[in-house]
Amino acid sequence: MIIPDGEQNKSLKTAVRVFEFLKKNKYSKSIVLVALGGGVIGDLTGFISSIYLRGTHFVQIPTSLLSQIDSSMGGKNAINYEDAKNMIGSFYHPDLVIINLDFLETLPIRHFRSGMAEAIKYGIAMNYDFFCWIEDNYEKISLLDEESIRHLVLLCCKMKCEVVVQDPKEYRNKRVLLNLGHTFAHSIESFSKFNESLYHGEAVSIGMVISLKIANIVNRFSERDIFRVISLLKRFDLPLSYQRHIPFEDYLYFMNYDKKRTGQDQINLVLPLKIGTSILYRNIDKKIIYHAIY
Image 1 (cartoon, rainbow, N blue to C red):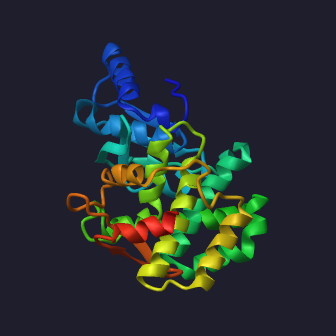
Image 2: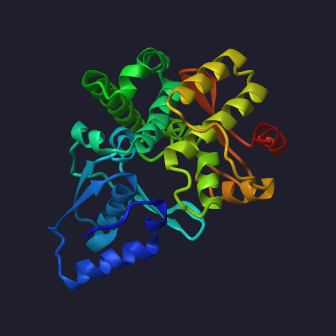
């Protein structure tokens, strides 16, 4: 089946269409579902594979930078429901992940840059040396230098796998660190109705900038480090703010769908202490969030 890309297609409606196709063709539990595409296709296929006949074989062949370094690994699969990002999902690992770097040569530059936001996120959240390496090699990365891209993808995969092994279902506050910037990113995507005016990585870039500003207030994350991060995001032409105005009550509405939430109206955020180290903060004061956004 050919499923169009775009977050608006990562939906229950699309999943039902795939289930109807599988049912009509009487596919058994021994079927192997192969996700050939970016993060949307991988998420959708993984979710369907996890519940069709209580689980089938599943292979990921990620074709975008974002899916190669992040979403194809770790077993998290989800679809959007109405205006809520990733509300319905499962933990279900693929039998195999096949990464072919040649696919990156086919990507529009904007898609590639969107994936770089997730790579930069790894550096900010948990690996200072990796952040410095991206700073030093951004020109080679932008030119898709083969050795640099291989190093980038391999190291990101290694970091993701190490975290998943330690905390496979986000019970130990380790895997949650990979959600740096995502609370705001998901709110922005939901507000825009997943219309692709902003790619996921671009939304993450904006979300990280907001998170840095909050960290500056909460734990004195340094202005110098904020400058370094923003400078690196700019080098990859990633957005620092959302062009449309989102009312604060809408931000709060969508943040209440966030999976890091542990209580009614309680907002928990992953914030960096310094580049390369981050922790989960609980019950952030809404006044601080407002100040950081506006």
